[in-house]
Length: 229
Image 1 (cartoon, one colour):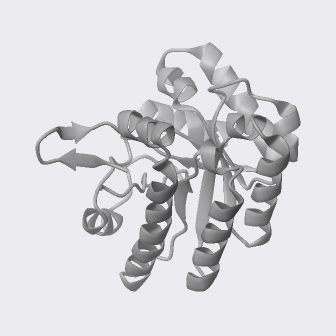
Image 2: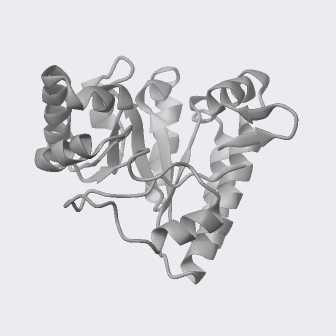
């Protein structure tokens, strides 16, 4: 989500997403995003790009049964291929209900990604319980890769742990060719960050997908697909 207001200019998602959560507007906002992601996926398919789109799901919604029913209905109706990104800490507040809803998403064929892993109090117990397909390493560990061997060790151990659990791994915050090359050597599956692409409207994304890949010899490349709002 990106917001460019005609009078305020660029409004950071760190500001308006947090306000949406505090005011209760996060549900209608997320419902809009799910519907728009489904439409965008259809546009991308017509352009020749059959891709899974990821949508961030706020922890405030992981205990909302009616939201879960809405999301499941929309995805099933459109036969969409979506991935719901959740933070591990979002499960902790109401773990029984949250884990049950995640199970429903997984059973319906919606991929589940554990987002921002390492940014909070990461728990192996919850990591074992969440029926996830992917683990995303938080950018706070990826950004210093060029200069910090300690962060490199943590990233490598996280990749190995996730792979041992059958999860694919995406590194967030890849901003340099060196970081991308290091992640490739560590066996990271995918990368996301400004070095690959910045957030862009869907028309620009289609143009970007038609261009040559990032000029680094790696299979671990994916654009950061984010709709500009």
